[in-house]
Structures are given as C-alpha cells and as structure tokens.
Length: 203
Image 1 (cartoon, one colour):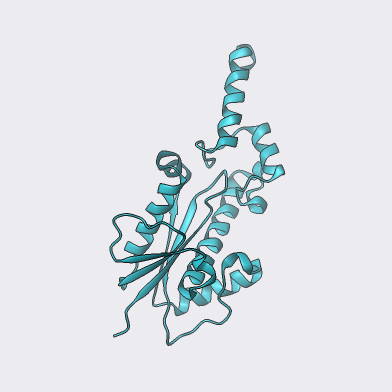
Image 2 (tube, helix red, strand yellow):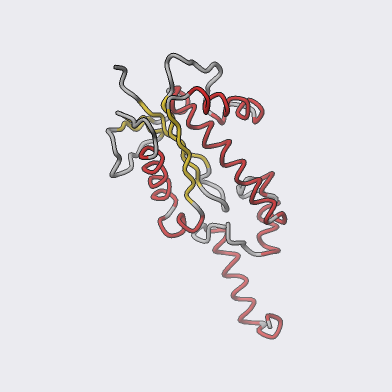
C-alpha cells in the first residue's frame, strides 16, 4: 500500500488582521491535478479554479483557521504551528508522513514530518495545500469585509497596505485586528494617549 503523505502550508502570517489559515492535503496519485504550483505564482482566477479540483480529487484535505485572538495569545509562529497540528490531525484517512513548507516542524504531530524550505514550489502536495490555504483565507477576508467594510479587507486581505493603515489610523482596530502586531499596537497607544490628554472628548 502506498504511504499516505500530506503536504502542509499556510497563508496569512503577515497581515495585521484576520486569521492565519493552514491546509493539509493528501493527493491521490490515481487522480492527478494539472497546473498545481505555489499559490503565489498563480493568478487568483487559476487558484479559484484549482480549489474545487483539489477538494474533489484529494484523498484527504483539511483547512484550519487560527483566529486573531489566538495569534495574539500564542504569537504568530506558534499560532501557525498550532494550525499545522490541527490540520494534520484532522485528516481522514490519516497521514503516515507530512511534508511541511518552511524550516520548522510543530511539536506534537500525529505522524513523522519533514520541513522543506521552498516546499510550495517543489512538492505537489504542498502546492495543493498552499492553494487551499490561500483561497480559503481570501474568502474569509471577503466575509470579514462585509462586517468591517471601512478597512477594505476584500482588497488588502488584512495586509498593511497604505489604505488599510490609513483606515486603521482613522477608525482604530476592530476585533479582527491582531493586537500583538506593531502597527496595531501603535494605533492603540496613540488612541490611549489621546484619550488621556482629552478625556472630555471621549465621554
């Protein structure tokens, strides 16, 4: 029997808002998917087209979101490691081995694993995981845009674009902002400082 190998990748470590998403995928060698690549090398349209093919043809797949409040509690590295553990543990059938994009392995994995720097451009299962993670996170950010349209999450996906930073300065952070990230911390400090100096305007 062929050993079941999962590819694992994440999306959204750098944004100021929203979750980090992690996907794990076990591809079916009998149902190949043409056009897989690192999600960053693909157009949005191509990623969106590949997403349902991966869901349909993979032997197993799992997407996990680690929310902003968890990122603040754990730090972004540990939040990503947590998401990887959840994604691998949630596969059914289980993986016998995991190939993880990057240079670090989470502790407490349910199977042996190998870290591969640049793996999203080398291993097809990691490519598939990178596509699932990216497309799923982009969809989540569009949902969050409907709740918080002032930040432009549908366009910037939570990354620190000039428009996002301007909106953050103007409106302050919402509950989806990562308060452990420096630009959000700065805005919170500035607003607290202003409130201390102008208490009457805050009542």
